[in-house]
Image (cartoon, rainbow, N blue to C red):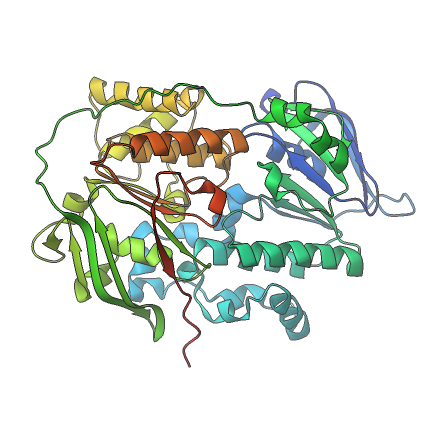
Length: 482
């Protein structure tokens, strides 16, 4: 397919670039649209699809003969990935409650009408056949991404637009997706437009690069030119400030001393006969910094849900938090007030149309949305933390109207706002651009240089593990139960 955008200007100002947009993709080409969070990358793909009402200019989709065609473009945008799966109609803890999770559809139901041969061919390419028997709500963040990418490819479009498709995938899955897209390009002529926030995710088979920054679309360059000239990367992802000064806690609480944050002995979790965790032992002492690692679907988020009080199966296991056995009278909120927590699930269910400052401030109360009014001192602390993370410009903007990467940044600030004793960060840098990742990593390292702070950190990228991490826990994925 050939796509031509000619001097396009949106009808409404909020959808405009700084200059009229012109761009052309020839038949057979593959592109990477690269830039920082909030640059306008997703807006650019809206133009490509022809979904932006224009005041001037045009967008044309043509076949090889030059005839205009409709359809043929499939888009999977990260900001919409969970609403597409139907998960967002459910509540946050629902996936951990077995009876309530039964309301979620099976993954296989989303492939109805596509034909068994096609289903078998594509699920084997991405090795996701085992996911079809699971309910959508029970899929891990990485599994859900793999499932939805496969579903989009099964429609066999001429052009597919994928927003940060590699993030959240383990190393094996990233390699499999890279290979699958390259294979489909060779076999079927599939054209791919990748929307990326970090340069390390740019595959070798990409032909052309389109730098985007601050609602400005720069001239296209080849992959070789983009990487050989440092001006592009430096312009898109500038270095973070040299000095960091972190705010203190908004108030002083009487905290009971403890030796261990966490003790697990023989912890096992199963849903409908499918074992997620099996006989897990783990002790995290106060002041230790851990990385929790494992493949997609190995149970990392399930394990953390036991720690943070969201999973009722905690009461059926031998779990001690802050030297106190779970189920001996403490409330979920007694646990949460000592923990700063960010996970893909929190991001999935945080749907509040409120200013980002209030999203950050909700971290004082561990709530989705701001459940009570903050004091001026708390708001001041929230603003200071936003400044540290370079997110002050988002304070007054609606959370649901910013980019996915910017949302992740705001939720990361939310985890820090009460200066918690324990920081549990489950894939915290998802969707952040290269510059913001570097800054966030430095902030985490400085925060955890305090020997009274404890860190549990989850990632699929080894280079994202903070230098303060000295201990590692690896979960092995349990094979399908017969």
